[in-house]
Length: 213
Image (cartoon, rainbow, N blue to C red; front, side, top):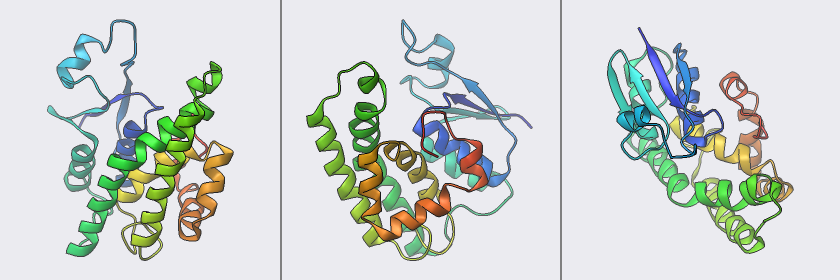
């Protein structure tokens, strides 16, 4: 069987999908795609993803895009440990945390904090402190909610779920910065979760050079 993920190793959302594949033990190929190339995403990628984003996914002729859809397909189509809780409440909590991260966490953690303090903006000497402060404030609100909502060692309960895989790449970027590490340290449950996640084989195997872990 052939399984291909199209995207870039540095991408938060590509890494989320890779984490799901790694946790399920699925052999796959990562086909690097530069969506920021001059002229925009290449035509062959637009055929896979009409909005020009990453990742896109293929499994034996079945094509899919949108990270959440890809991860749920991977969990349900392949053998291996379940990445979605069985209980209705735990599954709802997983979905809530994923939506929380997508709607409120990603932009603040990655673009507001990491990019401004350690990414392209910082390297080019154009850090916008107002964006940093806004990103930290939004990140703090998200971390506070994840601290409050969770029960058990993982974000949606007693076992690893897609919520953990969704959160890990975002936290791994914000924690490149001292401000991000200081922020996470304020939340004991989240700090313990980070320590447990950062050494998981799937996390180690998918770590991009720019991330903290």
